[in-house]
Length: 236
Image (cartoon, rainbow, N blue to C red; front, top):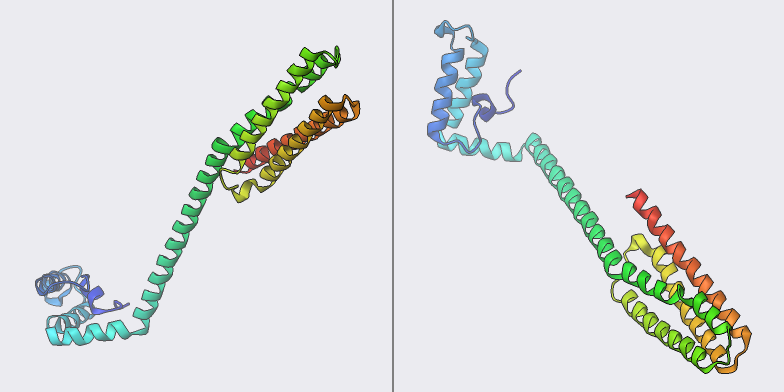
């Protein structure tokens, strides 16, 4: 089978210099010329080599030949293949960069939002039962009530920090479910703190029980956020 073009015949680049063309021709002539008595002698091949050299060694004919190559269907197809390959590589690089960006955003969100917010939620929720038990000894004791009110004030401060932290970073799409659970968790804690505060004003147990129930709901929402992130980690 003959080579696809004269450059392939001489096994040189299309950017080869005149000296490189001549050198390639001499090397191939020694290999294929019938008079060389070589085992590689090939009369058909030497005809192709001579034809290629006649065109490429003449600057004018070479320019004309190069123009033909650039406009030939095979060259166009080759360029199209090159373009498709380049497009595919760019698409892959964009996809890879997007994945890296998503991983970075997730890491940032976990470090800067989820972990500190979780710590603050625990500072609010965990002391509640002990605080209620202590107050139950005598709700009308001024010192016990003052301690409980101080706890609620701490809860407000922690909640404010948690809400500010939650809003400090955009939520990555991959953690939308966890972020929603965390958001509603903070809302429930806010409502719960207010219900508990109403109890300190009128000693109505209804507000105390509602506040405890809202804290319980908030804890469940926090667990839902944890479960969503655990499932996400297993998929990665």
